[in-house]
Image 1 (cartoon, rainbow, N blue to C red):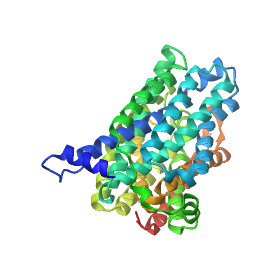
Image 2 (image 1 turned 60 degrees about the vertical axis):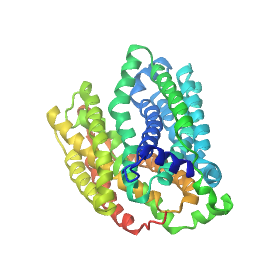
Image 3 (image 1 turned 180 degrees about the horizontal axis):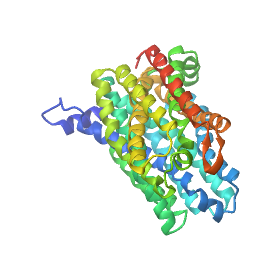
Image 4 (image 1 turned 90 degrees about the vertical axis):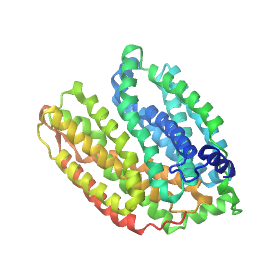
Amino acid sequence: MLPLRAMRMRDEGENPSLKPRLSERRILLLLAAVQFTHIMDFMVMMPLGPQLMRDLAISPQRFGALISAFAVTAGVVGLLVAPFIDRFDRKKLLLICYAGFALGTLACGLAHTADMLMVARALCGAFGGVSGAVVMAIVADVVPPERRAQGMGIIMTSYSAAAALGVPLGLKMAQWWRWEAPFLVVAGVSVVVWIALSKILPPVRGHLTSQTPSVTAFLGLLKDANAWRGLLLMTAMVFGHFTIIPYLSPHLVGNVGMPEQFLFLVYIVGGAVTIFTGPFVGKLADHHGRLKIYAVMVAGAAIVIWVLTNSGPRPVWQVLLIAAFFFAFASGRFVPGQAVVSQAVEPARRGAYMSLVGCARDLASGITAAIGGKIIAAGPNGTLLHFNTLGWITIGVSVASLWIFRKIRAVG
């Protein structure tokens, strides 16, 4: 950690009390760029479905397998490498994994068959999942606990930027050229970000002071009740968000009457709003307490989810207003939530733990989609039946997560 302190002092000059420190902010923005490319790579696949099914002559079921390949391999590989992830300098590990992710994304753009694309998507997930866990571990290592929620808020803006800017732009590129174009562009951006990482990010070795063997430390991690509470909180947050997300577009079109050509506005508005609300929620959590702000986010999300999932036909402007509140509150929960999860274990085991957190997140995402598919049904004229049931499940799990949040002890 000495190189980071030296960098901070160089940037702060005569005023070492600047908060957030300039070097710290620069590192956070760089790590947010890494996450942006991850999320862009994952999210752009979903709206490319019609083109991919037509150009590659694949069924909807095969397309669904292409979507899940990223998350499945991310979860499996993350679990396999978790016992060893804390043995290395986090910068070196991130550079290696991010290079693999960039190559996988390039392979997506060069694929000409469904089988080639499947292998490329698995490669992206394998390296992208690990590098995403390393990013979160670095944030927890370099940002002091008193500013960690704010730091997580900056990282979370990458999700918003990908939804608001990346996905619509990727769709336009696919329309102008071919479906391969978004992947080639993301691969190019990843190369630029990789170079910036190698030049700007200092070595992150503070966690290497522990002499406990990695496998022994990992086994101890699996016996840590506080660590399991953090994993449970992440799972609950995913259930409280992604239970309805996969079916939001069909609900808005079939039940709420949103014209399909305006659907992209929902993601632009929601993403744009959370670009600003994410860091703001982080500041509030650091100043007023993470549990208090998390409770406010849960309460606000519960109200908006109830309105959204029980809504009948509405004009477009009302749908966009509701979407803005939904993304602000529902996504806002992850800022204080991710901050407290990162403190559930000490720094020496944080890399392995964040890898497990990523596995829990990916697994929960798959389970929620499966649960939603079992509950909802197709109604007449393109409507969705029982979508409000998903809303009540989401609200119930979100409220229950408050109890889990209270039980987590901050130890690192």
